[in-house]
Image 1 (cartoon, one colour):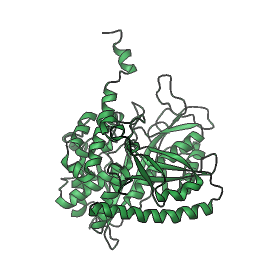
Image 2 (cartoon, helix red, strand yellow; image 1 turned 90 degrees about the vertical axis):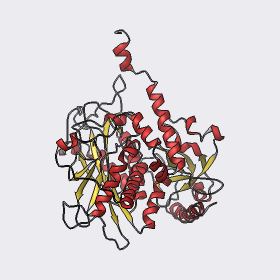
Image 3 (cartoon, one colour; image 1 turned 180 degrees about the vertical axis):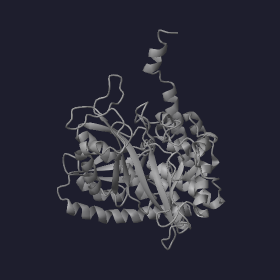
Image 4 (tube, one colour; image 1 turned 30 degrees about the vertical axis):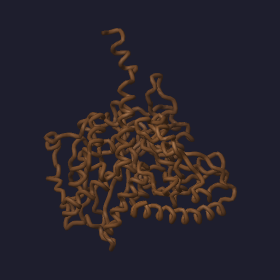
Length: 471
């Protein structure tokens, strides 16, 4: 075991000790607890796991609960991906589910007293984090900030659609019925307070569930699409906590929507002719004294540190695009004249750019990364932002001039509109392998290649309707 592995193993031992005390206090506070759900984030940005009886909760810290290591890389359909090479190809070995301190909470929508806790995947022999575990990938990058005595302060904004529990006969989503009105949402509703009022019982229950689960939900707006909403989560001085909040928030929204007879989707582009679902990340950075290092002298004049961070993200954005847009549907969101950025660029308070600077002066000085879709894995999106920022610091990257007009965007080389190109660019990137680690880089690339091959080989209903009797 090398020094880095020993450090990781020691960190996990400290986490186990902290969680053991947390679990004992939790059981004392909830003596009627029946079961615990352990939740493991996977590549595709959803949670996998299992149920445990309540009395097994303290044993989590002792490594008593295992899952196949391949669980972290299951595809969007829940199947193993042979090309990744970590399932039956190696005997499908187990890993230890290491609980994350501070994520043990009650599940308010459960039918019996139930708790949940996030876990990471660790190696049985060494005790170190698995290289392809997505939360651990972000943790390694956050540690690099800590070694520089810097703290990322991160907040996320997520867009989602409330949809009818029943799809159309062709399997497409449809807007939900407006509670109390008996009519379906079909048109634009941006900032419409009547729409928010109509869905107030559901939205209020989402807030209540977030409060119970320590998810710092803040503002809510109705967005452009029928049944589309955006919720903002508060800034926290931890990239890991922000990603945890985002991951668990999506689970809250889905379960509360279903409780109210609806469903929710974070699919990047669920409707062809309305806006897609974005995932925006705000970030500032504090030094050891708590000073925001992005704060410049004037509101619309980024200091060198902020410019370098933006420059690093722009320089590496094409290599990271598959992390922002991981699936086939993700690329339908990147359309001209939409609020989804299509070029690696930046600007002051400009919502058509990839990196928006809402403020460049004072404690609120920060950037907003606007590229990712809501279907992306929050750990990987935030990890890529940290990696780009660090690269910008190290290389003093110049982001170029800020964008002010749409005409400037038309002159820039766009991000790739093609899924296969984004996969290939990430897979060929030495920078990405260095930043995210060999194991993650290899496994994630192969998982995206495998999904793309399945989609490419699938003959759709649209193709049959178009060509079956016409060619």
